[in-house]
Image (cartoon, rainbow, N blue to C red; front, side, top):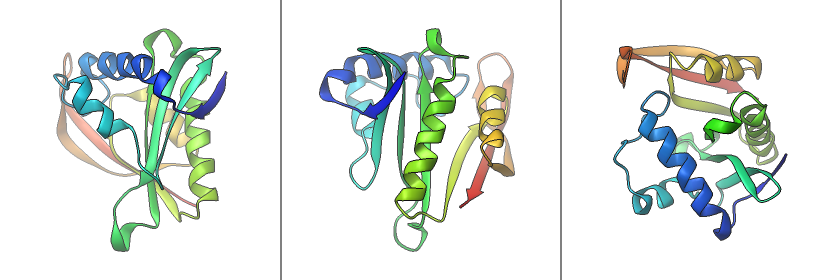
Length: 161
């Protein structure tokens, strides 16, 4: 597996991952009816941000986007989002993408990284982030409508560098 900057040729595979993840309605607070035209500008970051793919040959296994969490006085804190294809989950893709994002943010001079909305029941993501130094700062109760569990919390997670 290799992580690299996204290319135009990657977008069709990335869109399938995004579409499938948001339609699952279990891990990402994006509109499940989002179109490809809406998803592209949301996922493809402009500099100084960055969008990457994890690939095995030409096959996209997962993707991440990263950038400044907030403009102006909050611009010293980074954020990132990760999506992994269903067939590639549990194989270290999310871990590799998380490490890449953290390395990028440190190299770019950010003071920390903040995740604004981690679904509390997404145990694999929460545990991955905690293993990489993130702490849960708080949870907004019932802020996410899970398809089988009903309303569950969204965590705010943070790591200082």
